[in-house]
Image (tube, rainbow, N blue to C red):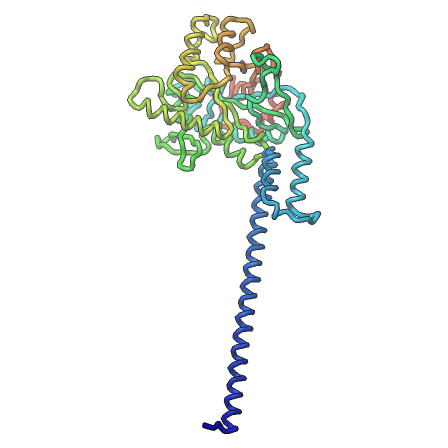
Length: 427
């Protein structure tokens, strides 16, 4: 069958048109593919930039907290993130961290160890003279308001929280003895130890505006349970030194050397941390598990625990303490409290009592492993006694803010900026 010339032309035109359409579709497909690849490349580049920004932010936080090697390791963890450009952000940050690490200097100044008791949350209850006499609280306690004002003042002075346990190390030649460790900090920084006496939440304090106990929050952090003046139990981040300091360090990492916080001085009578773990009550086993979980969480977050005696009995203060009494007291703490807060080499003395270094009562404490002994004094120096050290601590409370004002202002903060207006005049 013959095809006319006209039909052939039409067929040819159709073929050309179809071919053109196919070529256009192929070109369009190729362009779309290229655009998709370009978009994927741009997205990958954005993701890498975002990852780089995140790493730089994390490294900067580590740098602020004096985690120099950890910050360097993080920045070098992915070599593809580092370009050869001299202004590469990671290269610049690495140089900054290495410079900061190299600039550390040995601290040669006085020892700074300050301590608080549990904070007054509601001054209107503590100072109302109902129940426990207001004068005692006024003398020996600080309020939440005061503590929150003290922290930035300390930071402004150049203080950096430093671990109490990192002040000593075994002598290489004689490991039974200890020596002071060298402390290296940025120029102008001062190591600071903060400790808190009697973190037990005794029954007599509970109606007077203090926290009721420490608790584990749903977020895995340690909170305070506080009973409001209306009698309602609430969980709060500002019921005592510990959560307040945790939050302050999180917001101001430069105030803490490698995450260090402070030391909790625990007695044994009426339990620990607000739980009656030594009285044989039906909930005792549950409460013991709770105390251990809280203590473990806090130790992982930069806190230490110390023995503050078991009884905190007046025989520590009135001169009637015998060797037999201190043995009984210390052994009870080791048996009943240590299993739940952990072994410690720190003894924070009740009533700030001092011993002579060869006193048999003192030697018994050292023989039980308490190598760091902390009485109360404003000497601000450590005494090394071969196998132990004595580190004095300074009380921060109503008494010192009223009667040792010049000393506090010289070393720590302006009392007039801190003093709670609800605090009664102290005679």
